[in-house]
Image: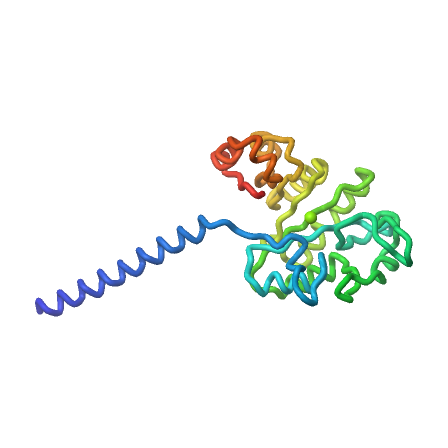
Length: 233
Ligand code: MG
């Protein structure tokens, strides 16, 4: 009887020890820096910035997330591209001023056509664990930005991807608009000119600033964490 008791205690201790270790490992992992592939994972063969391949390849290396940039075409279609200006038939054109039909015919460096946000989300839905970081680019007018914010949220909702998507923007209008339209959305501001306190007041999830901004305001890290905001660089 005594031996049996001892064995049970021993098994219990072992289990406790394993659980304790798992807890410590999970704490260490959660404290680790998380990495986001900027414009996807594109510095690799067969990939290109903001291409569907860059998204799939980011998923294959199990980073925290994959980032991309979105513009509204002249005919109101959210398109995935970094710059507003792009070469078409040897001429520089503006994404904002061009219809989606033309934009979709533009071929990226890896041979894929420029994707629409809808096409991007469709592929993202099939990825395993990464988050999608959607950057909404600053447009010429508030009306364009409001339309893009509305359309992007609607599209993300239609794919039921609300919990796997985060938003970033240099535009304060986009930041506040997204939060206003979906208070649960994770939204980060990029422009570097507002303190964590202001971010908390407008309901943002955190700051996402260039490292030079953080170096100038090192106290913002603790300030943000104390306000339960995330700090992205
Ligand atoms: Mg970007």
